[in-house]
Amino acid sequence: MTVRPILTAPDPRLQAVSTDVEAVTDEIRALVDDMADSMYAADGIGLAAIQIGVPKRVLVIDLDQKEGQRNPVAYINPKILWASEETAVFEEGCLSVPEIWDDVERPARIKAEYLDRDGNKQVLEADGLLATCLQHEMDHLNGVLFIDHLSRLKRSMAVKKLTKAKKLAAAG
Image 1 (tube, rainbow, N blue to C red):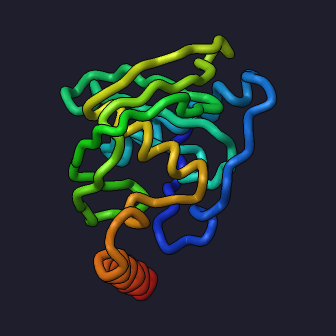
Image 2: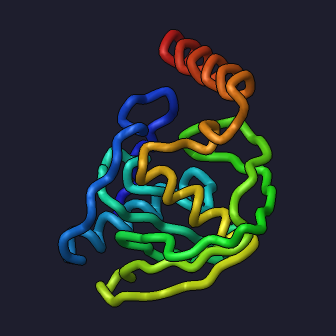
């Protein structure tokens, strides 16, 4: 298990569309473990493989992390089967968009299908924070960041702030 560096916007690799996992192998399970370690090291509750530079359709989410527990769940090749017309607004942040938080409106409830870390097909109905987190992380698999859901002005301000922070870090 290894903590890997997390890509930050405006890194163009974050816009890549991830490919399906052909089979859940020991290599994929090792990726899941590295993702969990990387997520915990950055104090996050979700991470997509593309955020560590691996364009595979793999997510790790651990909402228990907020209470100091560790219960990571792997979602491999996740797909949304159904989304409610009812929406909910949550303030979102992202490990790939550090220091930026804003309200994002998404479907309040979803039904998703995925493979677990053992390769078994699972179906999950989610609402609240889990529904939001799944949708946020699944967006990453399609090259979409949460700031892409914001107004053009807010997105532009966020990208400028991130670019400035990267330049300062490189110079520092």
